[in-house]
Image 1: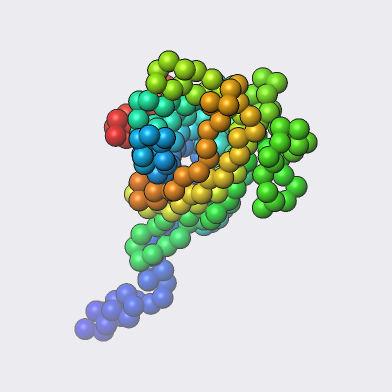
Image 2: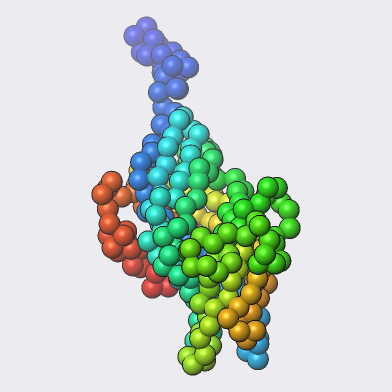
Length: 250
């Protein structure tokens, strides 16, 4: 009887409880990330449509305890679903190759027996460098804060526009993007969750006034999401894109 009592006491000892505490997941290393941003926007003559920006990237995570640091190392794909075949837009391959984001601080949060990846709000700037991250975006191509990330000699980053399948042109844009993430850690190789985001952009010029695109939209947070899948160190972009075939068909 004493033997069983001793086992009962040891079973309630704080050390025994500590051993039962779930271990913090190790997220360090290379990952593939699918990110889908969605917003409602007004199309002339057509009314409101759902616009999606779909991006697949290679990212790296460093971890110390529950603290994380994330970098985007390479964007493998970026395309725009405008909600109508009458309007198509795309960015240049040179812009996609120039995109690098990070370091971005994040953390792992524990809720009950579940763990979550959390990235607090952070800003991404495209085609512009600001002294104060909250200052107004430039409205003139001559503003010295305007960059040329593609090196094509045009202000900001270049957006290619095609209308009705017939008319093609370009718009030159600067952008401030605010994003934050919260995703459930579903296993050692998978994280999935939501993206909260806001987009602010200014069109500085266009190849023709006809292609002066609007940056106004209304985010659709219920349709924005991200998925992280762990990848081998040497995974190619083709292998990364293949990981998200199902999601990319949505």
